[in-house]
Amino acid sequence: MAPSRSPVLAVVTVLVLWLCGAPCTSARRSDVRVITDENWRELLEGEWMIEFYAPWCPACQNLQPEWESFAEWGEDLEVNVGKVDVTEQTGLSGRFIITALPTIYHCKDGEFRRYQGPRTKKDFINFISDKEWKSIEPVSSWFGPGSVLMSSMSALFQLSMYIRTCHNYFIDDLGLPVWGSYTVFAVATLLSGLLLGLCMIFLADCLCPSKRRRPQPYPSKKSLPGFSQPLKNTEEHEADENISEEEAKNGKAEKDFVQPNALRQRVVDPSQAPDQS
Image (cartoon, rainbow, N blue to C red; front, side, top):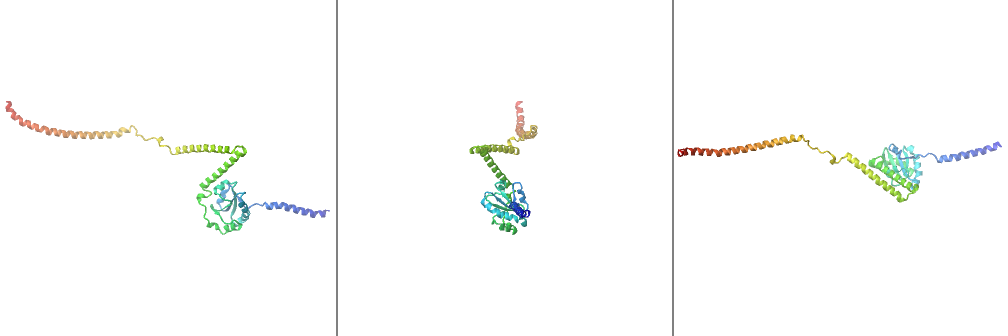
């Protein structure tokens, strides 16, 4: 009996191992790296091919097999292959301004170029091996994912997603009506705008104070006599000179007027002397 059971046990063992090995083969590790808001700066070093997709997008679903096959060649081509789920990483979708799905970018040492060619494994391999990316103009540094402008855009996208999450929480969990949720956001917007305006006015007043508050430079009282004294002395001196000139003129005129009279008296006196005698 024992020899007859051994072949059966062997067959059962092979079937069990094959069934156990089948899920492991189908669930093998993917060569595509997942990029998030936390590790996206890894794209600034080395060469990358990044796909932006959404799980509900039919075109993205059709691209996945080709993208996975291309990722298997990443080690031979010395290129990293990654993907970004825009439904979960809203910050990255705003940082790269994703307006269509799927969107593919090529990254080389911090320079980003948008790939717009055919989307097959062979075309991806040729794009990297033949360096076809050199014929594409890179994205301007102003619109690069690391710029201040795109960082602000990323924060704006994250804020919009946060507002949407709060809106769903107010409606689904708290049971507020739609107009009630809008009212909450309207009041919050008014209060935040008022607070921001007050902060801006305070900063402007500290950095650029009003001219009315600046102390005006008035001359001190002690300095007034010092400035007025020379003017007064000058005016008195000029007045004295004018008076002296007038006196000199008047004196000369009186002298001229007196001298003829004296001569007349001298002439007249001798003639009057006999009459008096």
